[in-house]
Amino acid sequence: MKHITITRLLALLLVMAGATSCEKFLDERPSKNSSLPVETVAQLNALLENFNIYYADQNPGFLHTDDYGLTKALYDARPAVNNFVANLLHAFWDTENIPTATSGDLLWGSTSGEWRDVFYANAVLANVDKVDGTPEEKTRIKADAHLIRAYAYWQMVETYCLPYTDARKGEPGLPIKRSPSFQEDLKRATLDETFQFLEADLKEALKINKPLVVVGRPQHWRSSTAAANGFAARYYLSRHNYAEALKYADLALSEYSVLQDYNVSTDMRYGNNQTVALNAGTPNASTFTIRYPYTHNNQINLVDMVSWKEFLYFRMLNYGSWWYIPSQELLDLYDKTNDLRYEYHVVEGYSYDRGMNTSPAYNYPGYIHFFKDRLPSGPTTAEMYLIRAECLARTGNAAGAMTAINTLRARRMKPGAWVNLTANSPANAVTKVLQERRREMPFGMRWYDIRRLNHNSDPSDDVIITKTFYPVNLTGAVTSQPPVIITIPKDSRKYALPLPFADILSSQGQLEQNKY
Image (cartoon, rainbow, N blue to C red):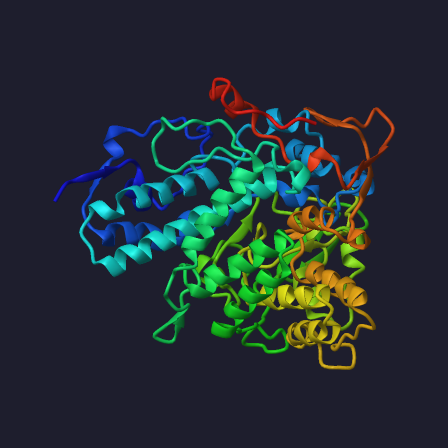
């Protein structure tokens, strides 16, 4: 049997994938000292088992949405707190400066982002037939790797490329990486070719034949039939294929349909409170206690996060700003008296934690699910109920849509007449389902939703975002100039985030930047 060397593959596994350096897109060659011989399928399996490598979705797309509520008033209250240049550029769609300010883009990155995941999936696929293991084990490993690669490509194509339409299918997609070789062309395939590659991976991933629950224990972190079906449901919804999306959502729920019940103390709880001093040293000095939800213990707790029992496939939005600022529009969607999502996840006074507790203190909430910067982003049972509801509504079954959505709401609302929504038409059902999606999955799914809603055949659900703020540039907000009204129309090319400038440069002309 041959010794197979997979560069950096198990070396990174052993150090738990902690690097976040600014290596450029698949350009940094691994050290010879980090190569390890791989001889068995068990070693490849160990790489795929390590959820710490794959779970973080470091996507800045949420900053571009109407869920993110950095307003002029909030900025003026404490400019030093909110002058994160990259956040400002993303929040106000400055595609000219984003590529320079965010050259270390963590979603695109080769050491901590989706291209790293593609590299590992390709390394497994390139070597699984050369190592010891049974045919059944190898079939499983291949399907796992295809799911990882498909998920990574979906994240990137839905972030850096224009939304797919027949008119745009020839627009730039992503480089197609079929192997771990550094010699592959970095030229961007077309959008159509990228989706063909992604969907072929998805079809291979759907061959996974492993339950999510093994010996009574859900393995949320690892690929399973429920994970593949859940991702397929999300994928086909994004392509407006409601029949296929419904099919796969139902398949996922038929295997695993557990929901957290926000009314039950064993399912939901508060973590450690934090007492903050306000206006210290002034006549208005006081204290405020911030109540954090569920798993917040002033530390990152991966065990708590991976144990969230709704996950079909454990992935977390993990963006380093530490403040998901809810817009007033988002806050107004909640029944603040009866919706337990508002009670648990909208944390009053969170601005004090972010440094707005003095001279004078400024009170504004934050949205928190687990730790301060981590929100669920992988497919969940809750998302499957929402997909089922939307697909039924869009195909004319308003009553069925409301049954699906009310199953979820019964686990999210205090008991009462307000739990069960009704709809007087399929169009009305679609509106109510989309509002519920936004309440249930703010930030993490909103960018993807806006992209697909603005490019489907239904103009009634279009989302036109308008914000008023100072002009921004590479130094931050330009407060010496008056505020401007900024709008992103439904057909804007800014729905594709720009690629990092440093990676364009290091590709030596192979990578093409998006045109605006």
